[in-house]
Length: 124
Image (cartoon, rainbow, N blue to C red; front, side):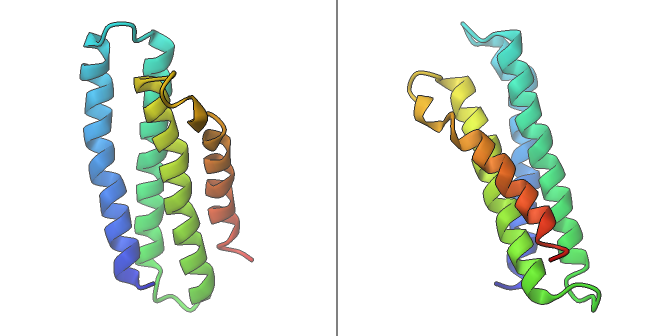
């Protein structure tokens, strides 16, 4: 994995989070059956996605620093990216159709743990 993967992943998370935030603020409110709690969940998912994009941009910025081992950087980037997809992605799916995506419920906390592991991987 190269620094360009980290940059592209960060850009993907950042760009898609803007669209998902906008949809959450405007599109969800017009959907029948969507509760305020679901809108809050969507907002949490998109906020975590934005934070992850910024964290991955930071990883890219320090990718040539001698202060961090390349292996730690790569492991951290993969875990942050995967954790974000799992955490935020499962919430998006559950908000849009809880019955259809019920199986994704347990993925949300696993995604959160994967995100935590991404941060921890920086210092191991």
